[in-house]
Image (cartoon, rainbow, N blue to C red; front, top):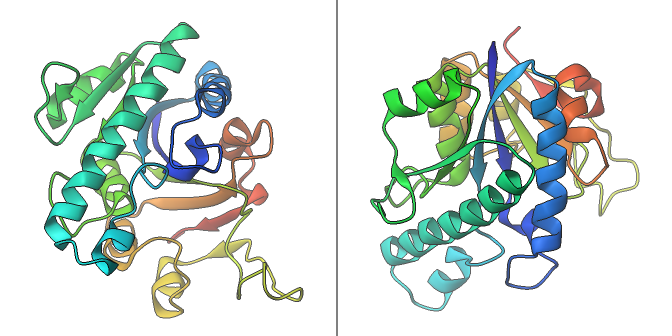
Length: 235
């Protein structure tokens, strides 16, 4: 069976404030269940932490980058635990695996263990980033996809339906790309994901689909109809 990584921003789990909205998390869990029930892909999930902690803001006020990044990693684990709770209430089997060692609440990330879970159809939710500062959750998504043999990263955006030639919120004539190569994303600096993550996807032939997760049914639809967003591929 195919494997995918679903990348969810922290902001998508929030009601607009610095918190976790259980209502939002429950709604996303229902969307993920719809994807799971198609029985066509094994699912890994990466959560961001922007709803809880913005390391960039802390750095602007004098915090050390390393400390700021580690705090962000902890924030991702909180989001993973919330999503796990909602998915399991829907009857789905899940595991939270973290790059930081917190054995009381989650399994440590071990590639072979994650591979075994996914082979059994268990949804793996990866927290703690890569376990290292200076790397984003985009890079975590690209790394886990590479390690676990995933062919696609679904970049579920909070209100953005793809990649544009310029900011559609500022320019009414902005045009959405339907398909791009990895090289175009990097050379045009389109900010689909950070440069490290984009390069890793290009080198390992991992497709990226950027789509709007706020439209009901889109997470499941993304697997069947990539035209709902922008597909980045080497093919």
